[in-house]
Image 1 (tube, rainbow over the protein chains, first blue to last red):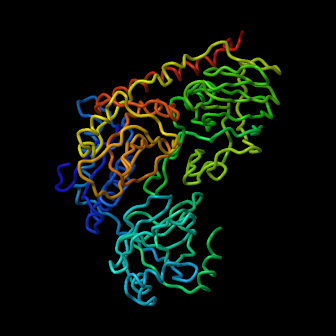
Image 2 (image 1 turned 180 degrees about the vertical axis):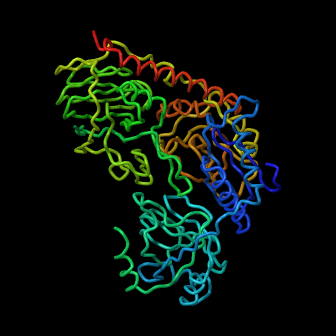
Image 3 (image 1 turned 60 degrees about the horizontal axis):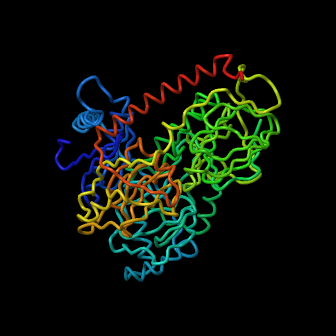
Length: 236
Length: 332
């Protein structure tokens, strides 16, 4: 890739991996997400898989074969370069999704431990988490699991030494410097601080994942009654 | 029309070509572990639309056909008996109503695919009938088959060339399975991003002809390899990035992991290689304890081998379709 700072690697017969950096960083992630949006718009036939600092592009080599000397990887790379350099293409602004969260209690069994770890009281801990401006860097681990960047670093906390066998669906959690939401009942080692009544993943819905890479996210603290009322309106 | 599962076997799942296009949502492709074997099973059963089949692992299921059906078995040779008569693989068989098919163990290899004319009429999830065991997606909420499961079969025009009757009827011809079988050769490995981070001893060990063996901890997601523990010169701090079937990862244990059809979408371990796609079907036939050794390949060579296999497969699929259309094909 001729663009500065992007390294391109042909990792498989049908895939290129673009690397934008080496670490979890808001600016690197923003560059990945901007590139993903541009490539997806210009070249919808490529499958784009953004991660924290990289973007996988998967293609059908048969479609990208040519009579000339250029390999499918070279042709995809040239098309991607053109898409990234086309500065005139407008890219839609990211969506903002609000996630209601009932913090603490049975829904957030690790909230008190997080508050103690941060040296804050519970209310301040909730306010800090709910006051953040987050962005979905990537989805992974399980269908619809969003990895969010933007956590106030005072709330960073290592994963539990003893991962839980069953984390309930909707659990809002902190793992290291990241925060995320379990879309289904899964095993997991993150610190559980609350739960959302929203359904994050439904394979049979027209849009299966509530959140997509690039979305902006805000949390809104709700009480238990509101949680149950909202939970009733969610599709089963 | 349906097929009833009397005994499920060790790990029998419904699979088709997988669920591409959703990796950005954290949804892997899953799908048949050996795509050519899946396509050939369908072709032999008279299917042309990428129908869902059964993927059978190490010990096969016992199935009852509640209507006459046309079926085909591909993959490794699995012991197969229909009402006490041996049922050959790599050909087209018509089975009568009420027939019971008992699939047993494998002399070699560990996976086979059973296609049925019409395909299994289970509701697709995100465009696919593949079972994703890890994500719990697909038929039966993403689980393996259990005794008592009923698999509806889509209606398909009867094959006119198969004479009616109430006995097992096997076509007089059979495909040569050898070009589609695991011949035990070294598996071709493309360089991985972090291959150069291996220390010198580990780099040699990766390509040692004595190589590795598939660990007993193998499943549809990955084959772990027993053998030399590989080490990096210095530890790498990596952030998660996309991984693919065929990606060879090196976790801190030093025991390489080759991802397979049910690969997760992302991973954070060093990637020390990428198995050539054309060799993935070989690896999926190696069972715990079987030898695995690697050789180096280039992207050019890997692509040429893949394209050559695709041409062979396309020719064969066309030949099968033509043969099934020929009225005399079923005559003894």
